[in-house]
Amino acid sequence: MVFAFITVVITVHAYVFYSLYVVNGNTLMQLNRTTSVISALNNQGGVYMVGTYLPIWACILIEFSLAYALENLAGSPVSFKLACRVFDPAKNHPMMFETAIICATVGIMCPATSLIAAFLYYPYYMGFNIFTLLANWLKLVCFNFPFAFFTQLFFIQPAVRVIFKAIFRRKCE
Image (cartoon, rainbow, N blue to C red; front, side):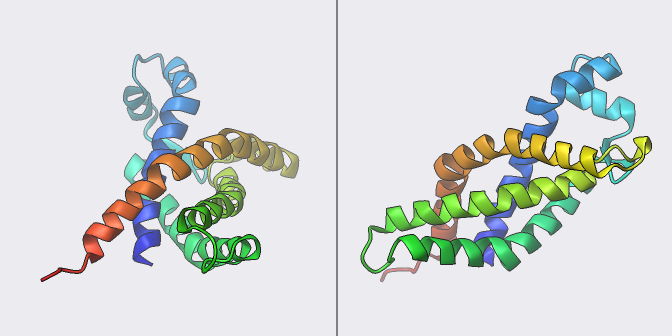
């Protein structure tokens, strides 16, 4: 659970930055006639989520809570089982097994969290339409999957392993 906690803390912050600045930054700045994303968010009263405007920290807490629960209930257990179907941890190199777990986790968590985000960030002021929700979900998966795959494989998971080892390192005497 500590490993998942560290992973989700880093991941949620990365995705909030990615979503607000990289994917939606120009649109936010144009709509609010500002030259910075943070100014645009301040002008509009926060981030539009669940039909209202919330401060960024509230969005991060909501996303963290949902992602942490999903990671512990589905992401980690299912990805481990999927990786075990392809690789035997006793016979295969640990790096291959870890990579399989990361890939399986991204394959599970990206569509699942994108669906949650499609509900959280849905433009409820326009009324609800299931096809709009599904289109938004597909769009989010297409934006998020490449980002999720590469950041998890090459940045987040290696960083989490270093942090985890530093926390739980046995003192050699």
